[in-house]
Amino acid sequence: MLLIYLLVLEKKYLDSKKNKNEEKKTEKTIPYHSEGAALQQQQQQQQQQKQQQQGQKQQQQKQQQQKQQQQQGQKQQQQQHQQQQRGQKQKQQQREKNS
Image 1: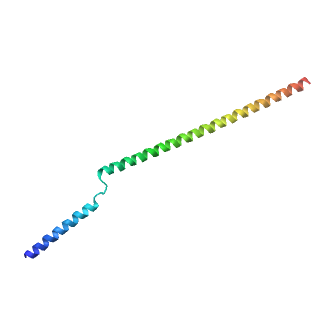
Image 2 (image 1 turned 30 degrees about the horizontal axis):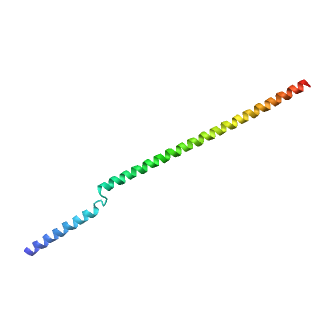
């Protein structure tokens, strides 16, 4: 009777020890302060990504502005060319009238 009691006690002891070991294994291996550091690093990465995206948007806007300015410049050149042609036509017409 005593022997059975001791065996049951030993079994309970071993089971509880086994459970404690399993709990330790399943606990997070990263200490709390490391979690904070990891979170901070993640936030910094997100912030860097936002800054990169903003930089890309600004670059795209600059490129669009440059294209628009180039197009406006080309339009102005075309207008000047047309005005020159008109002026030449008027001169020709006056020459024809004079002769």
